[in-house]
Amino acid sequence: MDFDFNDDQRLLKQSVDRLIADKYGFAQRQAMSAEPDGWSRAMWQQFAELGLLGLPFDEAQGGFGGGPVESMIVAEAFGRGLVLEPYFSTVVLGGGLLRRAADAPMQAELLGQIASGELLVAFAHVERHSRYELCNVATIARRQGSGFVLEGDKSVVLHGDTASKLLVTARTAGGTRDRDGIGLFLVEVPGEGVSVRGTRTQDGLRAAEVSLAGAVGIPLGDPGSALPVVERVVDEALAFLAAEAVGVMSCMLDATVDYMKQRKQFGRAIGDFQALQHRAVDMMVLLEQARSMALLATMLSGSEDAVERHEACAAAKVQIGRSGRRLGQEAVQLHGGIGVTMEYAVGHYFKRMSMIELLFGDADFHLSRLAAAGGFSPDRGS
Image (cartoon, rainbow, N blue to C red; front, side, top):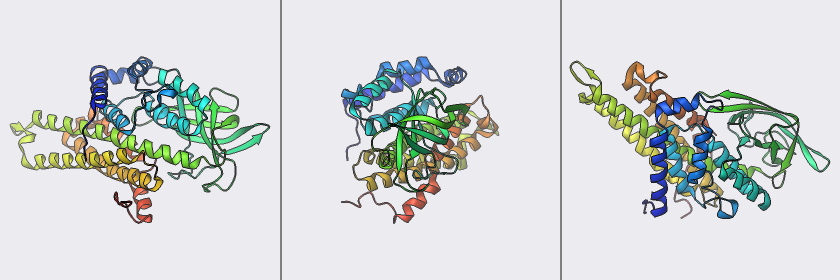
């Protein structure tokens, strides 16, 4: 199989790599984190000018028609830069839901605004009791006249504190864990019945707690059968996170190897000691295992076979979670005390890796799902 990029993909990689290298050094990131939103509006506009915000959308939707490979390129670069901006929440999650659930006029309007940098959206799905089950939704959507009103609470809404529109899952029928009866609704922020409280997450990004008390919601598609769309977009999000994690892990490995060459103990660089060289090699193996699974998830994230797509992305999440945790622990230990200081980048990479591990299900959650399904075989359908 040919894993080489085509000319357009190579150009994209060069452009985004150059942007992150020039504009997203660790000191620059720290300065952006101190801005009022917790990220840089100026950098967001640079993403728009470079075409990154419209990358996965069709040209008719104001985008550039990029696919999973293009998203992987961006994700890996963003992982290396520890990007703070709401790309994952607005473009990957919000944009993904809109292009798969909204009607054509709404897609043309809202996706075009996302691509130009005008619109920020957030996916309000997680509830305190739901753990990682996508069908576990207790928020209620009641029909009122020709529309719906929503009642319930959503937690850890990524970048929900700066979004002007929320995409909210709510139940129109059935029990709390039923697959049927879940709708997807567009909610304006600020709006009557909507309360948003922003918080900073452990990796330096932003999230929000959202309370809905009679908030007006516009249904996207059938208000009782949104779960398959949500599952598909979450699979695409898992592939994006896997690629981002590869970028994060590659930086932790590079920083650790560089430090081992510089840090001296007993009159020589600690990288000269064979035992520590073996640990660095183990880190490289963990990275390459994660990279292989991220490539697999990328290739299958666009599959129309829901079972194949979900199993590939879940398997990648298992490997990413386990490789990332182990590699991060090794990076911090080999750096010693400096590895956990706020002034040094390695600890921030490990924090982001820890957050990626937990988003939309940790390794144990996805492993148990794969085990219940009889395991994962990439060539099952061949």
